[in-house]
Length: 152
Image 1 (spheres, helix red, strand yellow):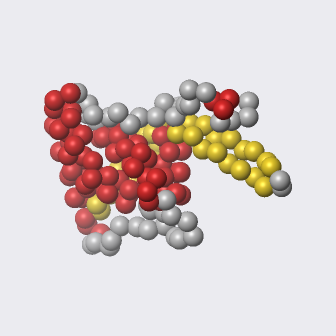
Image 2: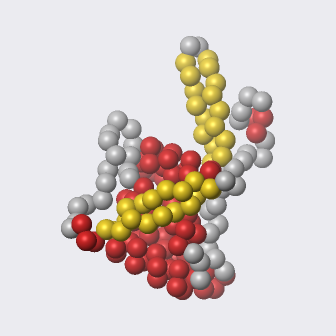
């Protein structure tokens, strides 16, 4: 089942994404998902707590576009987690990812095929209680030995 949503994207970011689509032959949603999931791998350095969500710098209204995206259920959860952990809007995460990773992915695509080696095929969330505390574990992917990480 897909989760349909919208993103409010600056025209410069959208232009980068459309250029990538033209070069690779991929659909816009595929490029967006690839960029967001790539951000997940790089996110560990940027985790922020105790702050409000950051948004992109303001620009005049005519430079922004609302685009429709369909995520798989796990991809939608990844995006929610990413927003919560990084304290950035989805659009800001996408804009930063487009500037940081798109060129390398296009280059890889031209030589080796589509460069999305960062897709996650599973999403696990578990709740455990110990010493009166509640612990949540979020796993982006599937461990080889789930019993070592989760109470089954």
